[in-house]
Image (tube, rainbow, N blue to C red; front, top):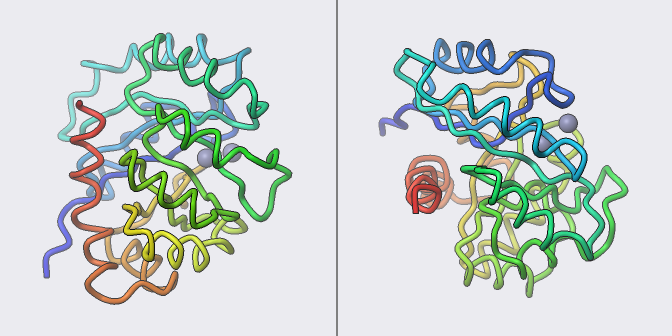
Length: 221
Ligand SMILES: [Zn+2]
Ligand SMILES: [Zn+2]
């Protein structure tokens, strides 16, 4: 089966802790064969305006055959401030909003997964390692994608996330959370991430081939 060209929805540039500038990261993804890439640098209240104002200048200025989406990853936001932060990111023009979930390898505040899902204005809950059944059901209701990640450390939560999401029939997406050019992956590697998370062949294929188009539809409204 043709896996098609890849869409990368979770990446970082040197506007946060990535190593490449936005245009070079887009170029690397295009050369690898991707059809779209979202820039989702880490932001909080101090940086969200600067990052979005700067990166939105990319729109219309990339001539290669790759779609660029400009967004943010809301990161280590105090749980009580998540609705305020999500609203701020949207009002500043973020086309995609990723919530930095409760990864098993970072001291993310407890309740973060639930707060993002309850607010509903994110598109992806990233590496939500400590996902509960109720969280996954909420993600399903809200059409929020639960992330399986190829990123070292965070990926320790993949098996758990995939199992809970599958039972709740919540949509999943395979992301790289790329911080550098070597982190970008092919569709074949993405399929392996889905299978390594315990998804059967059919669901793994759906996650890699169909989820990106569903997510693009959500993003474009
Ligand atoms: Zn990072
Ligand atoms: Zn990230």
